[in-house]
Image (cartoon, rainbow, N blue to C red; front, side, top):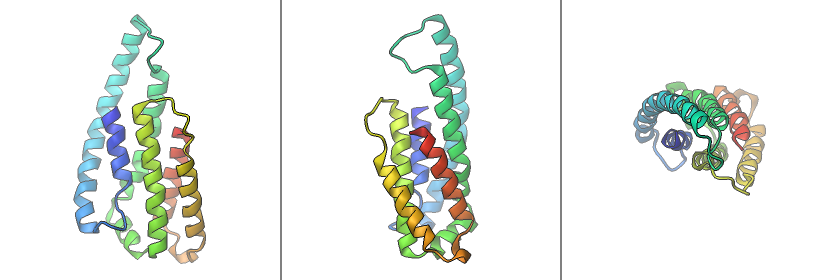
Length: 168
């Protein structure tokens, strides 16, 4: 499951203002394929962990309920994240003003960091302030966009942000 969450985090940071869409597309497609397989394997591992923990519960292990919750949230994030890799979304990315691209990129990077933290399953005192700051900046950048530029991409990012907030 850790590798699947890391791959999801990698998918979220594509594209970036520093990367050409032509080079980002194949990487995103490969990650989407890996993630589809990874989620299937993670579900199987969660089921196996359920049986193993039933036989010998260990106090220092994360509960299977926590694993299943993280997995479900990750799958909920994967759907809009993979949609961002469609041709229409790539075009919308290219049409965004550079300020909006930067704010979106910062939001996706902060979301990726939060997912990486969930992948380590470490109880951290870090409450994800970087995510809250990036979300606020992105909301401000989107608020300044004309209504005609608030598109499906904006809706997908809003959905991802809402799901990532739950990962906390």
